[in-house]
Length: 493
Image 1: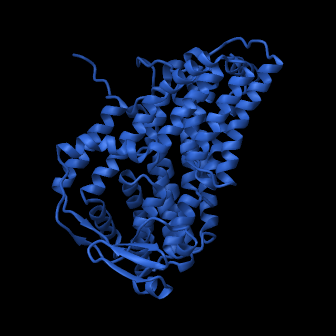
Image 2 (image 1 turned 135 degrees about the vertical axis):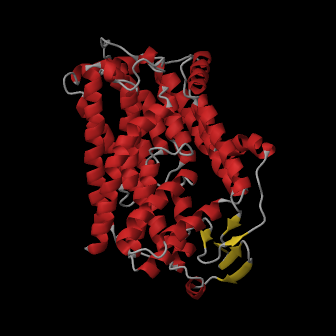
Image 3 (image 1 turned 90 degrees about the vertical axis):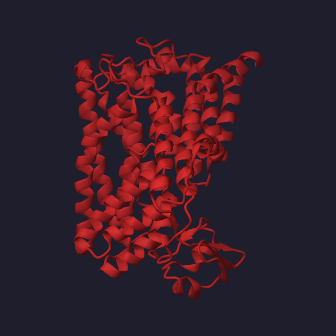
């Protein structure tokens, strides 16, 4: 009998798109009214459309515990759900045409990050011409001999710090071409670098202390200062970090000692960065050091720009394009070779870029099928009427499930937080703990949800999704109880 092979990321995503479309035929359609601030007025859209005065009194009358200043300053731009406005609407089931168009619409909708990925590929392709990356990998491998686990610890810690402060996740796509060859040269399998990089970002999302895209937006939507609940988030980030880093290091050391213990053992998986592996470092010339410094500086500037200067995808894309041009000039690359190397590098990441767009198609099908509001309403009914000690852990699970369908941190916060915040007031749970339940649940689901960056990240290293799920389930079983305990203690103390 032919052995079952788990389908590719493209097929997996298309299957989920089809399932989402089928759900629009089975679930009742429904929606909440939403509120948008524009030109000094509030625009209510949905079941009952209206234009209301842009005042604090309007927010209070709608049951939204939010500050008017957050709208006036542009900190809340996306539509906000209005509590107690859910109504069933006429069904809009998604058929064959919607399924066919979903990935196309998803690519249009995520063209900014797709372009970033393609330009990063071109940047890497140009840099490879000098051979500096290969020599640098060999040099680092030699220096880390016997201390390879520190590469995992340092990588996960730094990325987690980026995640907790400015929401580093999309940016991690840029790190795979650099770090994967180093991890492989250190004797690890392909699962270790993606675990170090991606789980590192999830640590920061779970314990997001000041992340403007999740913590601050969710706090604003819940009508509470982001400083409240900060200690619980710090504790959760430290605990999650210790558990996750220990988990990845122990797996990595087992694989290094015995490659047969790898979850990838026996699978026909090719290392996409094999051509960059070296066992003996080449000569580290002055030009090599200059190129490596410029290469590293590109990523340092990216992090600084996002964290301090307010950069986003457009600026990051321009940065890597400029860096590719500068590196090409320093290498004295001819115009023909530069273009060839850039296009070849972009081609290497084209598949990853397409996966990002296809994944966005899942959310589009659900939104156009009008079932996102139904899922949110069912979720709110599930947690209503429970005691605070039950409410918070269950709410964390609810956010975990909702994040499977809505992978945008700010999108989920603005859609769900006003609804869950109103329920929390009835139950007697502080709003900051509801924010924390959202952060813990959302961050844990990012380890799995195909509509997020999991599949693009796995595609960078050719790791099958089913292997990744198997690897992370054990980690989830450790993190979920920690989240529940921290939430309960935050409420009691």
